[in-house]
Image (cartoon, rainbow, N blue to C red; front, side, top):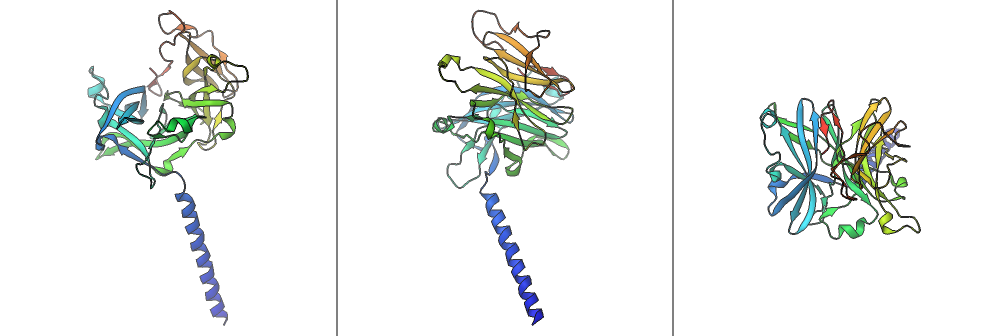
Amino acid sequence: MSRHLLHSALLLILLVVMCCNTAAEGEQSTGPQFEWKDLKSESGVTVDSLGVPGLLKVGGHVFAVAEAQCKEAGVSFTGIASQLINKDTAQQKMELLKDPKDNTQFLEGDGSEEPKKKVDLSRPTTIVEGNDIYMLVGKYSATAVSQVQNSGAADLGFLLVKGNVSDESGVVKGIHWKNNKDVSRVSFSEQTDLWTRLIGGGGSGIKTKNGTFVFPVEGTKKKTEGEAEEDEKAVSLILYSSDNNLWTLSKGMSDGGCSAPSVVEWKDNQLMMMTACDDGRRRVYESGDKGESWTEALGTLSRVWGNKHEGPEKGVGSGFSHSDDCWRRR
């Protein structure tokens, strides 16, 4: 009798474990699912333009990475174009990404709906850690619902994508962007009340000496009561995390009208951020408190004209050059 009761108890425990596992799998499957695809395999798709170019170094290999503006049946979406810069391309003058469709990938929602939505990959901003590449893409928009109706891209806010260098038989082929679990949404919802739009700065972010990931971000704040439409100007700030799970927007930011940010670590815990401003100047800011406050660094290139000064127009984009990380904004 006791043996019968023991067998019954074991069967009951096994049943409970199986039910729990099934429930957990069901919960996981309800989350966003993603799949990277090669654009060259898609018919009727064109690459209209490339933008937000950047360079990144992974191990001993250098890649050019850019945002690809794609179109299919009149509907626009974004992809990521990348190309290895080898000795042949580095030692002679040639056009990189000359055939962008052959070097472009896009991210698609792996769901049951047809056609599947392409995921917004605006303003790719990358950080390299060892052989891994972390890329911030997408944007936060308070008016996303109305915008998505006229777009072929699903607006999922900021996404953090992970990739690495792919090779076959020891020959480097390109960047391999990973699916599903290595595509995570960047959550900082409690800090979005002040903003109508947030988007990556493009180019490169940094990993500081204490291990913090820092991405430059461009934002547009909500108008306060009494402000006119023309008073709504873009500002530059940073998004940072020490574990890639909990992200924080800096409270401090640039002056209004200063966007296209790039950032470097100048000294221990000292960040410098360069911006391109509406008046045609570049302004450089520094912070020693993770962006809680920014002070214009007047002893640097700040206030240098980025174009021929003929009026209130933005000059060339901001940018830093950093030999250790081998990256550049244009």
